[in-house]
Structures are given as C-alpha cells and as structure tokens.
Image 1: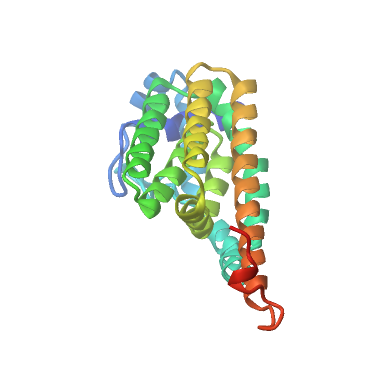
Image 2: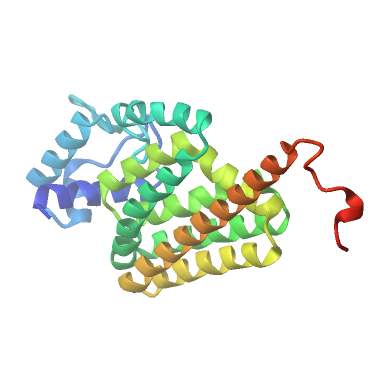
Length: 261
C-alpha cells in the first residue's frame, strides 16, 4: 500500500474512532501528524485527498471539518446501484446474483478484517452480533435483517479498505430488501435448525476475526453465504411446486379420499 493511501486510512480510522460528525472540526495538522506518527506533509496530502472525495472540508485559516460521514456511500456509486433495486423488485431471482456479489466482496472483507481489525473494530462486531441475536431470538425478522446487515458492514469497516467499505455500504443500502426477504423467508418457513445454523455461522465468522485467522474467516463467510443460497433456493423450489399444484385442473387434482394418510 502506498504511504499516502495508508495515511488516508489512518486518518479515516481516527475520524471514526472519535465519532466525529459532519460539521465537527479535526485536530490541527501538527497534532494529527504526532498522533498518526507521520509527517505533516503526509497529513496534508491525506486531507487533500479526502477533501477531493467529499469526506472532509478544508477551510482556509480555520481548519479541517468533517464534510460527510466517512462511511457514507459515495453518491456516484450509490446511484450506479439504484437500477439493481428495480431489477430485484421485478424479479426476485436477482437476489441470487446479489449473493454471488456478496460472496466475491465479503470473502475479501472477512480476510482483511481478520488481519487488520482493531480492538474497537472487534468490540463493534461483537455488539452487532449481540443485537442481531436479540432480535432473532425475539422473532423480529425485519429488525434481525437490519442487524444482520450491520454485522456484515462492521466486518467490512474492519477491513480498513476504503473502496471495499464504500462498495459494501452502497450495495447494502440499495439491496437491503434482499437480506430482509431472505431473513423473512427463513424465519417464517424454515425449521428451527436452519436458524440455529445461521447463528452458529455468524458466531464462527466473528470468532475467526477475533482470533485473527484470515483463512478461517474467509471459509466461514463462504459457508454462511452458501447456506443462505441453498436455503432460499430450496424454499423457492417448494413454493413453485405448491403454486403448480394449485393450477392443476379440477378433474386431475387428487381427491382427498385418494390421498393416503
């Protein structure tokens, strides 16, 4: 990684760690250089780069301010994702494409998070898991779906790769409906063992990151997403069979007396 990019990541992490909100001021360049362990020139270059991206705003003679939340999706990227929402709404089978995209992205974010997650990142991932578990145990499918998304986004943020974080946020912002639908179907139609497996997979993924094991983290997210894909595919196939059975002509439909009990 180039030094300039490394300083950008460290500066973004500082903004996130301190919970700086839009409109709040960053420390002076000299203080930032001391805290980040880099030169003032490197800090200045990082500020210029984040200013050009719309994350920070440098005011001459006044200082540097947070322009937008550092984890907010880039507008151009979010706009590029918008057509996906229409496709998913009109054809639910696009959620399989979403799962394939998530697999491609999240095997990378999990791998990097296991290597780069700070103590604060790990605590955030654990909190997201606990909230998700509470909603799941309470049977709140929609809240569990949103907590599920936050759990995966927390892992992406722990990768400390700005591009991956931007893409993941944009993807989840636009296609959260697929996570909600997957969760809704699994809560409503699946056997309890399916949801137990879901919890175990999330916990195994979290533990791999907490343990700093990138290979296990990548394997865990792969197994989790494959479990989700296989489960919703099975439910879609069952639903299609039921719909076909309702379209049978009355003279071909089995009479209740002919059905063995």
